[in-house]
Image 1 (cartoon, helix red, strand yellow):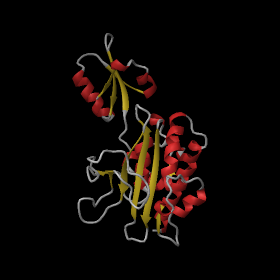
Image 2 (cartoon, rainbow, N blue to C red):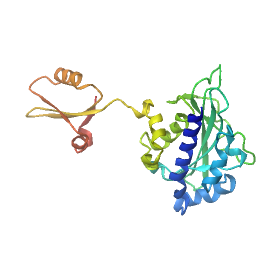
Image 3 (cartoon, rainbow, N blue to C red):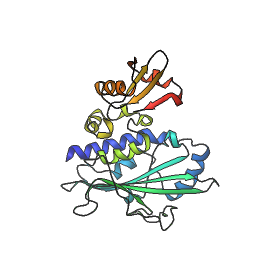
Length: 269
């Protein structure tokens, strides 16, 4: 239990170190968003404050809501006009630690108005429909008073759908949230800076071990075809010979070669 608790702490401290500089001098849409959200969703501005929100050996229960603060995450590069904000609570005094992480996404609509939507990432809740690691939408935040609900309409469901996720413990659960924002490599967060022991703990996750993709050129004197495929080499060669009757040469190529081919000439198989 102590190991899992410590890994949980290390993950959040690393996340703060990798994210807080993004808001040192915000510009453009990000500045407009935080000018509003800082008043209602007070940011964590130093490591000491985050430490008070996290569990430790003498305090197995902890919550961001106790201090009424939120951790602002780095805006994803592919959604640079979006500000992700999280709140978390945990109880490591249980045989299966309880962890609930709420994610809010703030963004500006076409008229420049601030909009928001949210999701919660949660550990299993015991016998019933939610007895698995999951994510589901939210309209309001639990445990935090004086914080406005999201701008989702009242009819927006907050009990379903409940999506199962690639998590097996209290550490991989919040890492799923990061993958949902930044992709499995989490390159925007400098994954090398994460404690190597924590990285090793997360390594078996299925989404970090995708099936290998290979690239191929199937060519004759008159025609050539380029494929992206998840087939094993032997199976690909067998199927390619069946598909392309005649004297075709089948050559495995690298991604650089494949990506140089015009988009309309690339095929997935």
